[in-house]
Length: 136
Image 1 (tube, helix red, strand yellow):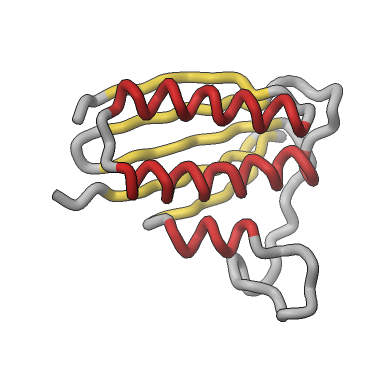
Image 2 (cartoon, rainbow, N blue to C red):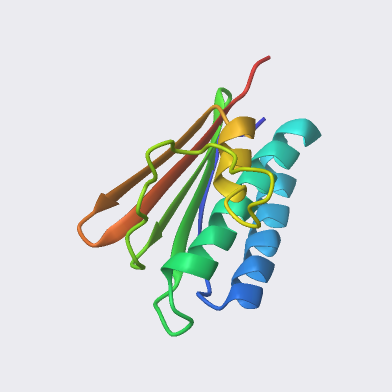
């Protein structure tokens, strides 16, 4: 496994941003040499968080979302930064909603399959950090 770090920009338009995310992940995984299970876990969690940002935080005419992907022998990390609306964190962060709710599962799914999912608002920016530890 290689130590690599790559930076990408994702369109704030839903379909374009998701397509760009998949393209970025394909290029990153080809270079990183990470086990398929780890790729699936991080890709799924990242897709859920990016979908939430695109659907609820940013407008289609907003500036691009910044994505940094980093891989070391010990972890895989994704960082996202956008200038969208602040996320109003519910009391029970990253918990699955009731069965009859139609929304609200994405962040709970991401948190369940990652080792760490963090959010903070810093200088008018939403900052997300997704971490998956690699166990030899």
